[in-house]
Amino acid sequence: MSSVCEHTARASTSSPALSSPAACDSDIANDSDPQVRQAFRRALRLMERGIAVLIQGETGTGKEVLARALHEHSQRHAAQLVALNCASIPETLIESELFGYSRGAFSGALPGGKKGKVAQADGGTLFLDEIGDMPFEQQTRLLRVIAEREITPLGAERSVPVNFALICATHQSLTHLVENGSFREDLFYRIATGVVQLPPLRERTDRAELVCNMVATELPGCDPRQVIAADVWPLLLSHSWPGNLRQMRAVIRYACAVKEGARVQRCDLPADFLAQAGSQVPQPARGNTQNVTPIRQSRPAAAPLGERDDVLGVLTECRWNMTAAARVLGICRPSLYRVLRRLDIAPLKNQLALGSYAPS
Image 1 (cartoon, rainbow, N blue to C red):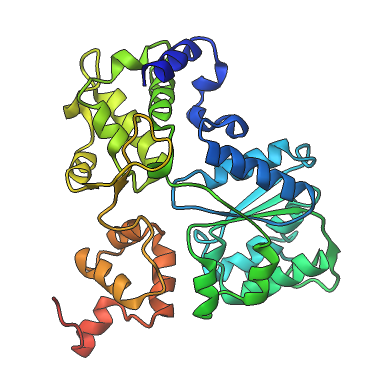
Image 2: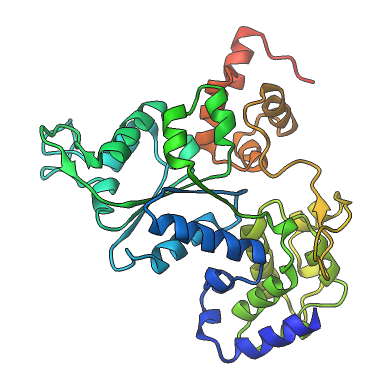
């Protein structure tokens, strides 16, 4: 660990990249983890051949960071990268967001119409994050756009040709969604020809270097070896990090902000992190895990959404608090509600009204 931190300490005073909030992700092409470097190289080769790229990985593993790096290193880097999170937009708006609309297409439409995300990406790259949450009807329209390379905005009479590279990302198993009928099989085969997988943080071999990079970003000019107390290092390196890079960055930022002395002590770590760390069960190390001990989570970061009993179990554990349940499942609230509809799980208030709710 010392050699890694020595390198980071020197870099923190000379590398401008480390001054940005996402410094540890700034050059994914030269990432310190071999799995991430391989995913980048493979995805870039696919992209340059005109093959759609599907990035799979748990929440917080850096799927959007990889997508942006691919665009920046591609032949389309001079054009625009247009991103759309399919899970964050209501079903009623996603069609107009994706495909745009013409003047007077519907009540409340802008007078001059609106250019959709697909048209904005013409000549560049379209990044569809959380593609598994796209409504079924819009999957049909997207399939047609990919196949015909043209779009018809809402209310328009003529189609418009488009030319873009497509990158999709998901933390879900699209194969499972296809099997249960919530994702089109033909669209799956269109976007899943170029699949790359990002490893969860618990399987990465460079966690010590990531911690050092993040500390150097928060405290420029410091020596990360001296900032982290000796009894804190084992906690950071052996944690399972269910929220992956996003969670690690949040913990480091918090600890560096609240520390009162020269070092980050155990008491400076967030309470929920300490509680989570105290409930984990160690697993044998995998591969070249120098200074890193992978941990098995008590619950997978992204529970299998197609299994009704599992989702009901999470809801029960969280006392039907939708925000908490969505966090455990690794999805957003709108996605959770879609899962409940797909699995025919009635909201708690409906169950109470019908007298069908039986608390465990």
